[in-house]
Amino acid sequence: MTTTATEPRGAGAEGDPSEESDFRESVRDWMAEHLTGEFAHLRHRGGPGDEHAFVEDRMAWERELASGGWTCVGWPVEHGGRGLPLHLEVAFHEEYARAGGPGRAGLVGEGLLGPTLIHFASPRVQQRFLPGIAAGTEFWCQGYSEPNAGSDLANVATRARLDGDEWVIDGQKVWTSLAQWSDWCFVVARTEPGSERHRGLSYLLVPMDQPGIEVRPIRQITGTAEFNEVFFDGARTPADLVVGAPGEGWKVAMGTLAFERGVLTLGQQMAFERELQHTIDASRRNGSHRDPVVRQRLADLWSRVNIMRWNAVRSLRVDEQVELPREAMINKLYWANLHQDMGEAAIEILGPDAMLTRYSAADEGDAGDLEMGVDHKLFFFSRADTIYGGSDEIQRNLIGERALGLPKEPR
Image 1 (cartoon, rainbow, N blue to C red):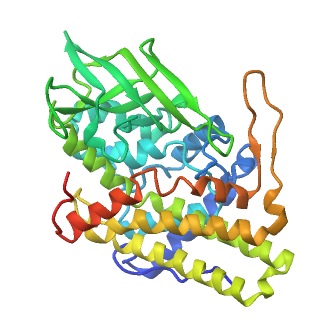
Image 2: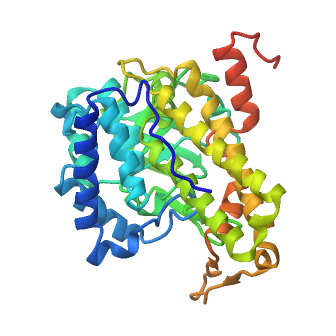
């Protein structure tokens, strides 16, 4: 069995084949030259379930990427990007993943906030923040989810009020990835007293290094703590650091979520192919690949991984619209359940070895990290796939109401 897939063609892969081939070779050559030496240990690290790994080294890698012009490759040139057409942007992220490129420490800034600023922010705000993202010198986290506003973002309770020329912010965010390492956070807060649901929200840019912010790590089943609770207690940010007009934060926040399903996720999803290969290799080592049922299960997973990639490519936008195309609305539901099935298959194929995990030595006041191989990490982390980023139930509602035009669910 091989996991080499043909390159998906269509909306994300149009263009001169020789131009694309030359471009892919240039990416491979650069990665082979630079993902060595001080960065060699980052190969294949920092992906889903491993975001806590070598964060400061991966930040340095962002600056290395920037020195070669490999950050923000799809951004317009006037905003610090390369202005690559979509098919070459897709090619870059695929070759980056194949070369073992580490999980991007600048993912939130480059993939979510940057495109949001380009579409919605004033020129002054763009000029202030886009260069730092492109250069790999400023890092961002996302202040959306709250204890009572997870998949239902419109239930946001964090509040902000104007005090002279500053916003004063009070409230709590949760599941904030890499907040302990981030310089800034984009925060959805309620700025109109008495407003409800999606009305009266604003999209604020908030510095993390200040007395009014406390970050508390959340230790997970994997033993790691890349997610956090973030408490705002009189935190402040300048009044003009709002994206869009005050009270129009819902529209901006929905734009960010559309970018979250964009091209930058291709490399992350391609990691599924590598994880599946680990499971196939384990099956060959312990002989379970001789079982026709196991072989059929692996073949089914291989097919689903490639269907996932094909649908991701065909649903990419080549115009300036921010809204998700209908095809993109199934992506999250599809890959979340695929990833869970991959994790379950990996553990079952491992057999007795699946029960062997151990904790590393703990530092004082720390529980220590759970040491495990790729298959264990896949299984443990994938349990959350159908919850974070919009639960399965919410995804099905979005598909029904927005893609299919069905009546809204009664409240």
